[in-house]
Image 1 (cartoon, rainbow, N blue to C red):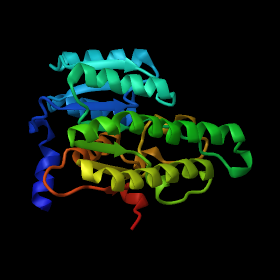
Image 2 (image 1 turned 60 degrees about the vertical axis):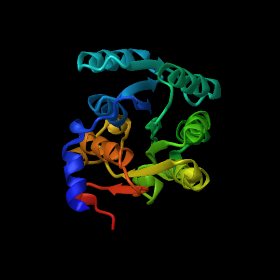
Image 3 (image 1 turned 120 degrees about the vertical axis):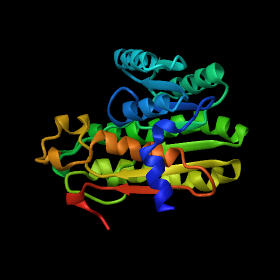
Length: 254
């Protein structure tokens, strides 16, 4: 099994996902953007979405230039129920199905609890819980109808373990973890599989506005995180990578 997994990780570009459709929410930058590229390289139809249209158009151009004509860029605020529903409808109408869902949209606020405001907490819950709720409600019925679906969500390591100055963020990410675990039970009879990505310390734009002192040189790369998500999403056979804990060597959690 380990030998096969190693081959799959190293050979993602040889995987043929032609005819399959992947919706990436939060595709404008970071992990979401790189996962969209990996699915495009594997020949899938790719629907990329975020709130920033300029980032999406740039990504769409890049994927088209890489040889994939089956790319749909749709700017949407998935924390809005109507936006999420219209996004799912447009993706299904264009390509016939949504086979893979990468829910990478979210927000991070890390600060001492005494400085955390009610507005901060509302923003965290809206971006990390409400957004996921809306996207899942829009997409999962379509997957259930087709009796196939692969869903990857990103609660991160703070959806599994606590960290100082992250009370609000952990509250939102723990909620996301709980929601996905419930959905896995509810939708398994419809052939829908869920993977929770508990990634620790990814060197992404998340840290650009965080005042906490961190050593980004020791973090996971966006590439490593995206490869892990792609690998979890595309597993075949009877196995499910239900929870993936991937940490930098300097911050192992066992």
